[in-house]
Length: 271
Image (tube, rainbow, N blue to C red; front, side):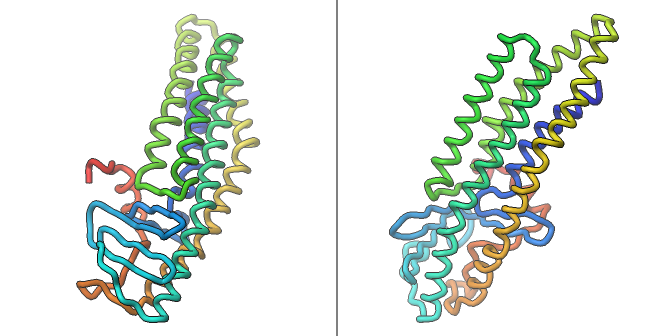
């Protein structure tokens, strides 16, 4: 049943991979690794960056004005201009990131729906699985909309969404298909086993055809955010003001791949 297992892994992988193209203010590709350790809250009256660990812990900016850890910071005319552009860049980034996240969710659940169509023979079982997927799909989109869609990015929000909504859907489908595979194997009916293998092979091809192209386009959209993240970094490097310890303010930074992987495994409560 190895092809069957691979097909299921591919469906789950498409779900996770599409979502991982861009999550929050975090862009990954071979040329561009930018991220932030801050929660970001975008409101009409300003943008707030907050984190529980590290200094500064809170940064607020609006219309060229800056406040760090509750203290107003005097800035030059040049820095005020840079802060305005920084705020404008972040405001324009979040809606695009939210759109990318929504498309990633759609791609993933479409891949899972393909699994249902391939392996759910019984109409009642198929209806039940489709209803469950649709409900989880709606919940996942609602979480994106209530977070990024409303200008709120919180650390690990996308990871939690994947674990809670998509992970639950994958577990359900894996259990259903695995039960079919075990039943076929125990029956000794080689025709049943061969039929399941054929479905797995067909599923692999269906996902390649229907999902890969969309995931590639989604990846291109995520990569297109890289110059805008680079611009944020350029603006930071040009700031004339300094923090109390003499360092520049760095709200986004380059993050090595191993740091990203470790960060993805760290829950807020673990920090």
